Length: 149
Image 1 (cartoon, rainbow, N blue to C red):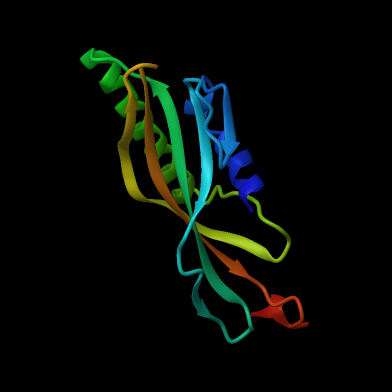
Image 2 (cartoon, helix red, strand yellow; image 1 turned 90 degrees about the vertical axis):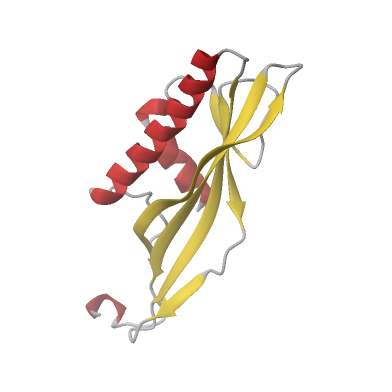
């Protein structure tokens, strides 16, 4: 699942200037990101077909150059706002990450808008983060009629 989300986020045009999108790792470099799984109650509800409506939570952390210059601070904030708008547009047009065969994404959205998490004044870098929720349907592989519901 996390690999599919990483691939999906790599398609975001606002991430073209990022050096890398990691998983559960953020190096000391600037212009990098990491997608990290975060705790959430996974099951939303079940269906008569045996399918389950589930959710997963991820945090996108982005490390960017930072300074006391207002222009830099606004650029960083705009970058993340642009990402949030892109994610909303992808949800609206139903362009979702592609999961395994028995899992189909039905919704993706920002659950906590971007905010400054930390600043390293010595390195002149800041870490921002955005919380993302993905809802998906997991079909019951053992139900021969699952595709009919």
